[in-house]
Structures are given as C-alpha cells and as structure tokens.
Length: 121
Image (cartoon, rainbow, N blue to C red; front, top):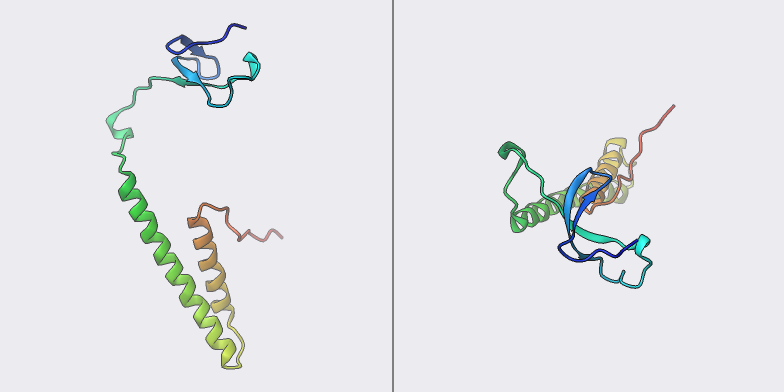
C-alpha cells in the first residue's frame, strides 16, 4: 500500500465521495501505512436553509448564560432542602426532586450524560 501525499485525490470508500489529502494525522508518521489516519478535505453542497451562521463567541456566551441560570436553580433548590432540614422538618418529595432535577440539568450542561435514569418496572 503506497503512502498518500498532500493534494492526492482520493475516494472515501465509506462515504463514496471524492476528497483531497491534506496530510497525515499528527503523531502518525511512524505507524504502518494501513494503520495511518489521514486528514482529508471533502466538498459537500447544502441548501441555504440547511446552514446557520457560526458565531463561536455568541454560542459560548449563550452557554455561559444557560449554565449560570441552571446553577442558580440548583442553588435555590439546595437552599430549600437545607432550610427544611435546619428547621427540623422533613424534606418534601417535591423539594428533593427539584434538587435532583436541577443538579441533573447542570451536569448535562457540562456535557455529561444525565444522572437520572427512568425506572423500568
């Protein structure tokens, strides 16, 4: 199997699409040729309705705002549970559920899988 070089034209078998080799993945130069990963540029055409402008700064600001809102919800739920506990009463099921759901929302906002799973009976 001959090595590929930058600007080589290739057909990507799994996509049945043409592409242009940009280079070998960094750190893969010493791997056997059949195990190397190559960076390949492809051209795809999309309708305008399938495309949105990409603004990384705005997306990060929106994510930060969402995280702050979810963290505030978690803090409020935690305070409610602590107030019930400190008053010597029982924590209501609603307060406990709100705390768990708020914690789950913060967890998911941080790109983790939900900690809450459905009960299957």
